[in-house]
Length: 581
Image (cartoon, rainbow, N blue to C red; front, side, top):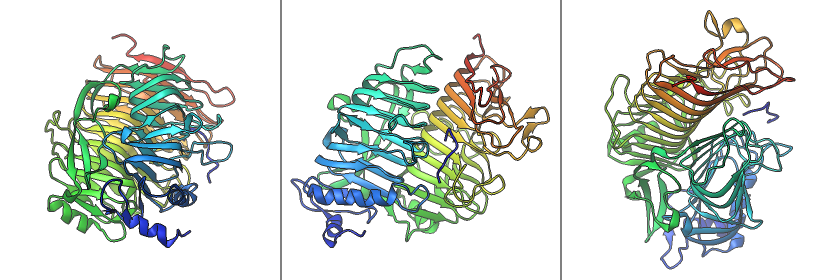
């Protein structure tokens, strides 16, 4: 979050019956295998009944920033006339092989969750895999972190704020927008593998990777970072219903790509895995023991929406295991251990999950690979998609490092790693978290890295040949005093982005680091700290100091002007580091 936050029915028996047996056009009735928090809609149902279901969910989730509700709304192939507002912890998912198979005429929208059109707390929601024909010609998606628009076709325009209220950060990938994308007041944004007619708007940090028709302009005015192709990516797995059966599609690896994978009506190259090969998990009955037993039996995991209390870690040991979350399923580490550990094996995909710290301090929430092992997985990497982390906010929590990546060649595709700055259990000594991300593996690539408010390095990179495309980070709000917030006796604070001295090759594009110091006379010496070697290269960096306290003295190492706070707030920039190659 970029500013201070002023955050803070039952349906008829007929509708409930319809949830269990969804009518499929041209086919026999299909059973919903996922439980009551997964709402399966079909064109065969009346629009009135479906709208009532959508409205019921939104009434519960519109302002439920830290509530327990989790929902997925699944759209069978066909055409709909609906107004779908997307609230907290809600995923709207088309079930076709391409987005063209599901068409919603009307509105699909994310609205600002705070007064005055303020979307800086509009988190944890997604729309994926369908076509929207907006009734006004423009789809509104006013969001900040922990969100996704994926595999979408917007048959019109897209606007990323609400009536010019604050908005700060989001993700758009593998999508086609027929008209113009207007970023409005968005302070930072990443678009990856997108086709559109036009893009308009800028603020602090806009990154375009593998985008066809990126906007013209030279950084920093406007602050556009354009990378022509996406060097390596596996798109997020997705759920489909076809020929009377459910499958999870796992896309293949792509190199040097641009634009949407499915454009011109072509289906992406993907492997279909039938639901019979998944253990379908339910938060009210499953434990770490039942889930690990399913993994030991060779099953993949599909988490239905809910909050799963895990007293011990889930152990993912088998090559190509799929861990698939619906409706922001949340893995809550309650036993002072990680919520999940992934062995150093190829091809594991983890998607659509929120990892949450528990009261007893964990060493990590998700650990990928094994420390000290360096098996190469370039042909079949482990990949994480829309995987988010939270320490505090819903309840007190504590962790040393949220995400630790040991496995070489890992891909991370949109993550928000957040130590809460508001909500329940929030305070310097309450929701403790040293680091957001620690990377020990080599050749790790991240698209869309959002890391905020941790108490030491937000990001600590120890591996070689790492790449990051877009970085957004707010440092902690409330260090109690400068003398207790120093990374060395000579260095005030902890750099947000730290590349270890031993690293000889690393590269990053489009980085913004911001301060909102609530304690007077606290400063940060430098936002980014890296070894001065030719193989460590950074492109397009900026800092800014919000509110009226503190400062960030340098952008990267000892380069870059000081970011001064209000009332003389500025935005120092550094185009390239080292300044000569």
